[in-house]
Image (tube, rainbow, N blue to C red; front, side, top):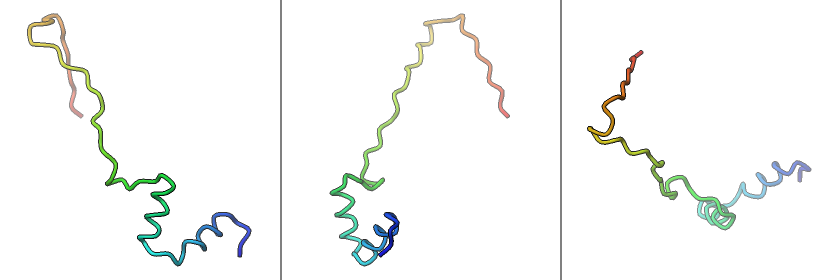
Amino acid sequence: MSDDPLQRLAESVAEITEEEAAALLSALGVRREQDRSVQAPPTTPLPGPASSSGVHSEVEWV
């Protein structure tokens, strides 16, 4: 067995099934990306059409 911790870990899990690996990672608190709920970032509401007529904005498309 190797003295390198990463190599020892790789050797330990080399012969387990995908289900066993998922259970191990789940027990360690690791979740799959598809299992994580995606939360929309908070947004700032746009002002109403009559709230500020003095606002001027320009956009240049490149």
